[in-house]
Length: 149
Image 1 (cartoon, one colour):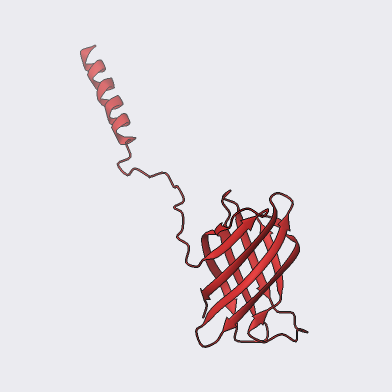
Image 2 (image 1 turned 45 degrees about the vertical axis):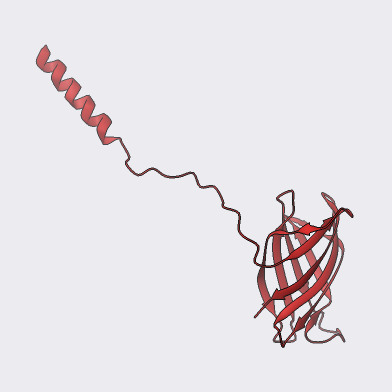
């Protein structure tokens, strides 16, 4: 009986110890990304604040298809994407955009307007925008001195 008990205990101990995992996986919590650019936004006419985690996704000021795409988070944590472009028929400077498509999560903005101007000497972009989302209302903003390549 003692031999069976010891054999069972040894087997159980072996099984339990083989289930141990020495590598502990940390919880994957997204770390907030530092803003690489400054974009000031105002929601529904409230005091402006810096868009969180703001950064340039893409930019093109080297061809007729001028564009700039910026992404960042509102104070609510919602991701907003601003896609500035230049309409082909535009008589504006080739270093500028005159059209905006805005997205908040999956919602497209309405009543959008936005322009940017690229300084080819400093490689910096300035601009302004306005858009409305059903979930947040009107959002307006400015970008100054945004570095692009």
